[in-house]
Image (cartoon, rainbow, N blue to C red; front, side, top):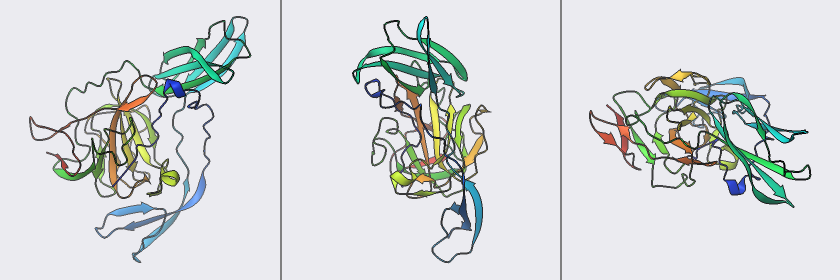
Length: 314
């Protein structure tokens, strides 16, 4: 089982001009065929193609399309006082934004770097030295760069009690977890429709629930994973990915508690088999990086996930 963390935004300052996300398209919906059947273990499966074994299935026509994630946008405004940037942050979390002046197509230094509040419109004034001929490039990352990952206790295994599942990939295994935002991710092999629970309490900031496609073609399926992203009180985020079609039980802005059911596992997005991709990340200064996590086990015991091992919820 392999996976890659979907939808994580990475903006390094040296690449800020290339990472501007102002023009992200909003994908429309279309009618597609969804196939519903039970696998050899009797587990309910939703997929974009029928089973190969001749197993009975139900075909439905559904409206599909990528869920639109929260996106920070910028508006430039010139006034007698100079050039300003209006920053719209629709997320239920703060965002760090950066603006960089470009001269002759090359960066000429950082102009503005600021943390803007959640669900806000903020005006940023640029230095008077910026003329109308100068091009200003922008970038952003959700989260506070001052956040320190400090969970009050080990994470709860994100599934029901008295259950045990194998770990197919964990640090330092980097078959697909090869980027800073995914290095410490954990892939937990579990059947589709396994209930997924919050490993830690927080505020839901993003969901994607309308996808039912999956496969091992990264270019084709990489952006089609259903997911839930939760902001913790210390400013870190947990991402639960590859969730089953239309199984998500939470919404952006909702507060969830540790151990609260949030969705069901699936096989959506860039994935070679049913599993849950779990990772905790933080803003490390206009770039996203994952952080190590441990899970609670028997009373008083802590488990560090390892490839080939197991996670068990006592």
